[in-house]
Structure formats: structure tokens, C-alpha cells
Image (cartoon, rainbow, N blue to C red; front, side, top):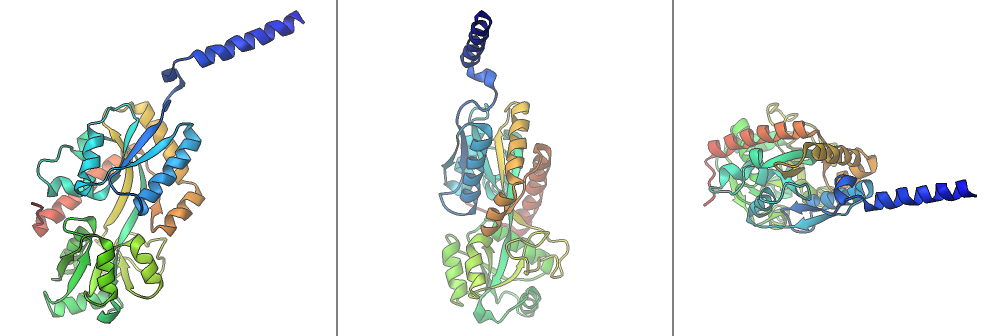
Length: 325
């Protein structure tokens, strides 16, 4: 009996000692983590961020909370996280525009993507989809190019705004295809799609997620997607590269970053868990429904990807002479 009591007492003391350990000794994370997203609720980026947060909570034992902070074309949220403490509890859901395009478009940004952030993992990518109005009679990218070359400046294409990744994907395509078509920037995707469906504008470089229902219903025609490989959401639609322009590759992307200075061991730990979530076939299948190709990466691979993206889009912005006042 005395031996049993001694064992119970020892176990109780050990348990008490564990409970008394400081939170920091229990490892990262030991409190809720914020994922700051530069878009309002709704949309594919918000969807995948919330799905990731839910799964990370289950894996890491702490809440991961998505905080929507839209404004200034993504610059507001991105600048906010850049100036946040580097303890790993405020993270950025980084996106193409704010991280790879806006540094060239906007003067006086209060952040520099390549030096102010630590890369954690890629989360998802999505191509832009090139679509045609039923009224245009165009059913392939080759037809679009042939008509545009035959009548320079006559045709127009819709985008969701000046300087967006969709606009720049179009400018990049114009360069490789040698065509002259005019951008008609809309204040968002819905109005642009409505005018393409109605035949008021011939073509569009559109958000894939928003376009999928209209493509499925036959109300617009998908001519090509802009990534290096076919989209899992539109496996029967060729890429721009497959359509005769092999040097072309342009995607929008969502990735996870921390303020520079986050402990490397915590970056690695979080990256491993994020990649484990994104490797789950169920998570990937949910991404496809949203038009997303879900896949993670190492921190080093994401850091290199970011540098390459900045260089690519800087060239497109400069060559096209795009300016934001």
C-alpha cells in the first residue's frame, strides 16, 4: 500500500509540475494565431484560409483565426503584418497582387515583400481563365488571336481592374501573342462577367472560381487557362502554352508568410504542419471545387518563387507602361 501511495504521489507531483511549466516551454504555438487576409469574407482565398485554419487548429492545439482586412488593393493587410511582432502569432495570407505586383505599381509602400517577410509555405494556386462571349463566335484561343491580329485595336477584354493579376496576365499574353486588344477594367469580377455573358464585351481574363458556374452552364466559353499545367477544375480546357504560346505561364496564388524575424524552428514547424494539411486528398478536393490547385512548399522554395514572381511582374508592368496614381 505504501509503495502504491508513493507511486500515486509521484505521478501527481509530475502532473502538477507539467501544469506549472511556463507556456513558452510548451512550444509554438501556445496561444491563438491570427491569419490576416487582404480580402473580404467570401471568395476562394477566404475559403482556403478558413479551411487551413480549421485544420491547423486540430493539428496544433491552438485556434488559428482568419482576420479579413481588405483595403488599398491588399496593401493595408500586407503592411499591417509587416509591422507586426515577429513572434509568429500574426501571419499573412499573402496574395499575388500585394506581394508581387504592387511593389512596382505603387509608390511609397510601407513594406518590401522580399525583405520584410519570412516565407512559410505556398497554399494554393489558380490560373486566370480566358473566356469569350457567346456573341463573339470565338471558340478557341487561336481564333481570338487571329481576329485580333486582323483588326488591331478593335476588340476589348474585361478584367477586374487596372493593375490586378488578371490585367497583367492579359498584358503578358498580348506581348507573347503580338496582338492589340483593349482592357476594359471593371470594379470587380461580377460586373465584368455580366457584360461578357450579355455580349457587351467580347473577351475576358477572369477569376476562375467566379467563372466556373457560367462556363458549366454554357453562358461563356472557356478558351484557355493561364497556368503551366491544366487546372484540375477545368481539365478539358487547354493552357495558353498548349494553345501555341509555350513560354507563357501566369498564375494567381495564395501563400503563408510571417513578419521577418520569426524563429526559424517555429517557421519550419508550422511549414511542416501546413504541408501536412494541404497534402490531405479531402482538402485538395475541396480546393478544386473552388478552382484552386492546393499544394504546399518548403519555406526556401516559396522565398525563391516570390523573388521570381517579383521579377516577372516588374517586367510586365514596365513593358506595358501601367501606372497607378
